[in-house]
Image (cartoon, rainbow, N blue to C red; front, side, top):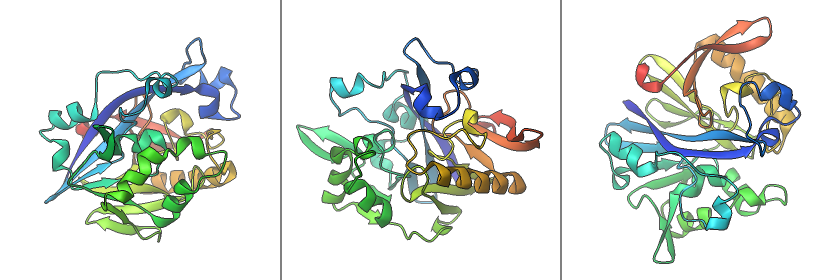
Length: 279
């Protein structure tokens, strides 16, 4: 098995929304905001090469939305899905599986492309993986979350016949050294890949823990549907990660790709930060 970091660029989100009840005077030290109170965030995906399967975890925001939509998110950076795949010798048509942690637009937007005004899967040879609980949640969204679930990002996957569902039993095996953990604080039945790699366990954090700056337990996003559930899930996963020496892989941290953990007087905090290719 080989793992590859797939960078798809950066975007900006409101710092207050990203850190919830935590005062700006605190979070601004780790994630400085601009004059509009916006912080910089990565859209970092992961590619898993395992025998004859090439599994892409999440797809970034994509490029099919209109100028008005993108004007809210200030996309920037030189990396794209295609350029990052090419850097490792791959093309999007090589992807056999697209594993979607959840269906918010910054995770699934790149899963669908606009082709002569038709919306089609951007990875034509891939099976797309979600789970029934989250799919139903996303396709029948509540008023608070529906702006994050865009039909044009989701329904074409099902209409193509390329959609499959994963069993929602926690710890279900997706592939050889790839298990799936489920959390529901951020959104219903979000999936976290737990991957055994080079003698280590790598936990893909998705939106349970967007960045190193979110390690303290109370640092919970205002975007989370059930913040108290997130609090509990963070405690469980951070303690499990510390006890078992997991490596955390961050999807949104603009600087830090991976980290290990240590116990401190203030709680569980970063031990070492590094890039995946340094393992």
